[in-house]
Length: 199
Image (tube, rainbow, N blue to C red; front, top):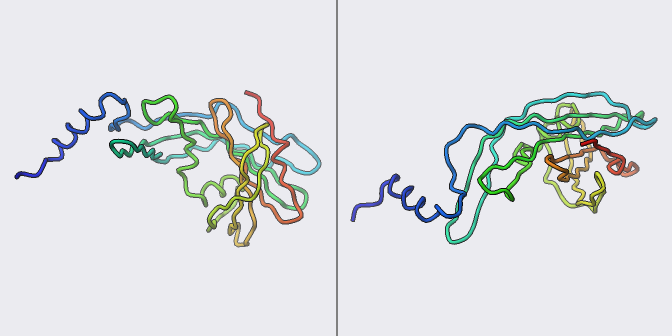
């Protein structure tokens, strides 16, 4: 028996999946920009030190399961709002607002492109610092960001050559996703609840 060719397999897969509208295709990268930045209002505790709109290039992967296992990959070029703040004691608080992108032909399948970026790169953007390593994220209670209570994640990162405890929360808001990351020593409560956004 002659083994099926790659083309034959693709044709068979297309026939099987034609009705679900999620067959991955070779396509141009999705280009998207966040609509409005999340910000931390100026206070005596934190001052804005970075206000940029960097471009992130990544590949978002979506796995589907069912009668047929399917993985869809889509290149994304995302323009992100970056806001970095510093307290009088030297603690950093970073906000990254990224566009939530629809990576396949399914309106409910929307992804934050920052989730596909290496953790060290994301923390580096949020801290505006050199980040060598980030440990595995672990759940560490909850926090409220932009009025939404969500899981607070904790990790250890090497930032500018020093080991630091960091905390992260992430929420969807409108057409964007907001990631907040803070250096978080035991005696400091990051100002997640004070973040605002006009959109």
